[in-house]
Image (cartoon, rainbow, N blue to C red; front, side, top):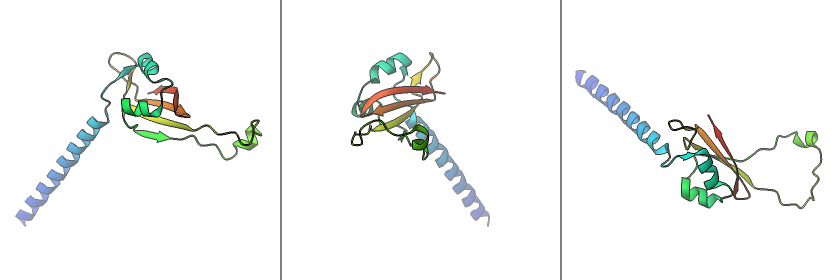
Amino acid sequence: MKNTKTFLTLAMTSLIIGIFISNVSFAENTKPNNTYQEMEFIQTFKGKNKAFVLQTLGQPTKKSKPVKPSNADSIVGQSNGPANLKKDEIEMWYYFNLVKYNSKNTYKQTEITFINDAATNMMFLN
């Protein structure tokens, strides 16, 4: 009985240490290799394509696409453009702790909005 208790204690301790170490290494992997000042970031990435951003920053932590509300047509009205007009491809990419707002602190989140494969809007959030 005592050996079983010792074994279970040892197993639980090993499991907790393993989880702690994996969380620490995961947190280290999510930090960017490089940080940027606000204007430096904007000048480096404005108008650039997705391939350039991927090569420079790596995969984003999160990606999303805009969603049109279900009742938007009834509120906004009819489209003024031709019916066969190609729709813009819009996608937002999110990175964390990438852009500094002073010498010690970084914004928690950076959003890059791509329209037709060009970085057109950048937002820094805390």
